[in-house]
Image (cartoon, rainbow, N blue to C red; front, side):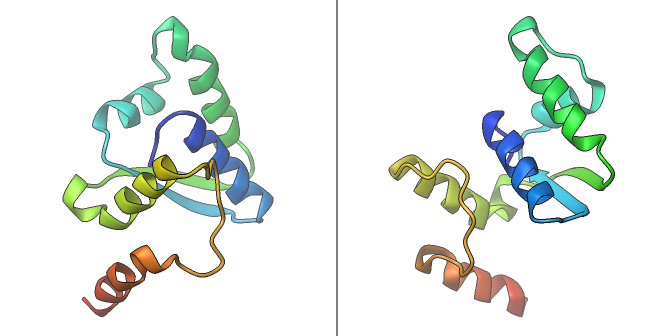
Length: 108
């Protein structure tokens, strides 16, 4: 999910883990258009420029829009982050809260 600082943190984490092909999903068409065009208001300039700099490293990063209904796992993880103090967190194993959703997703 793209929401500013979490997008940067996620990109930084993926880079540090040596992921060189990355797909970033968001249900926000506005955020995706802003990043794609690099056009933003003054308060977003630093953030958009930083995301752009991260994407211009030696890797392939693509952004795609997904509907809110098709992004249930990311939605649940976002809600978990709001309930706690996660920031950017790497899960080696999926949290129990989303395990069933993952199993359903894999089987379909």
